[in-house]
Image (cartoon, rainbow, N blue to C red; front, side):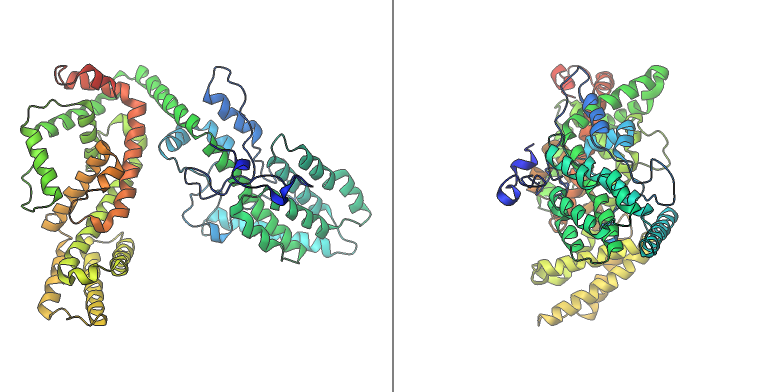
Length: 553
């Protein structure tokens, strides 16, 4: 990974006051939404034989994440606020701090191992009890600070505590080599000197706030430039300090995410070794721990040796693919471990919730698999609705991406709204709105509207999608599963090149689903491959599974 300083020209063209020559990252590789720090990550210590563990421990020592108020309690202590309301969409509740995350490797190792875009965001939903309590405490603090500074003579006790916390945060965002800027901060925010000024009533809070803001301009990632610039227009000292604390909270999390991204390869390797070692410990204590995994793979072998159902009589790519599968079933071509595992992973997306014999090697991924199954189910309904609608509205309407996107938005919104209700009720509403949208769009384009008979037929066919045995729904479901199987064999991008009929309208959604599925299964194979190899040696005769193929797991 290129260092941040190599990706952006120096500020001001020379190294001036405040180390203005610091480079800043515009985009962090791996999808971290540009949340890179404004400087190079700290260099890793020399290897000492412990590999990535040492690197991870090094994070704990070199990325201080002390929230204001952690060290001691008191009326003038305040936790660094998390993101503002604008940054609070789609965030997880109560994410751990980096030190806690590194220690809790069982959970984070699995997440970082399969999710290259993994990042952390510190936020409490306003609707939660803890979020409401925190907001009230913060409001009380800022009100108290305002009263103190407005008093005659002013009381600077809380302001001093606040400045102390800000100083610690700014210093925590520096690299060891940034000695000049470190000395500037130490001098400008010398707490002993500031206390003396406060005792004589000469503490200039607005001046110090402006200095802090200028320093943040040097240290923040480009994605925070706008937030910092907005603070420059704030004239009220209290609101300025409050805004500074909010942005500093975001800057701290930016640094955490960049550090995680920098160590991603080491975290992934550590994840594999850690999960395998923990599982082996359990297996040593409980030798029957792989019984359910063995049954799962046994079923996958049985599924592959059975003749697939007859293909629908449709001359498209899915028919050709299905035919090839039928031919493969009648072909004495030997089974391979990769084929068995692919079938086994696909079976997990059809897992009966009542079946408690879930594979032990996938228990940590069970929630993710359930989410993928739910996403697959929604895409099946969405693609079915679009396919039926296209057969009635013709190529003119469905040749418009705007029209297709509108139908997708309508269907997705109703699926979300009716999430806890029956599919019949949901599709009844979908059928009405889709038919109205088609009718209105045809009318707007000057085309012949649907007749009353066609409208009734459209609504009826859309409502019938609620039945699992519905022909359109069954075909779409089979084709999505076929696509996912191709993703495991060929990869997502190659599988998208020749999508079966009826799936092209949900290509973007399929790509997301396929990538998540591939990431999950790939990480699982890396961790538990040796166990799968041993099990499959007993399920697949050696003449069918060459040693080299078995070892490839």
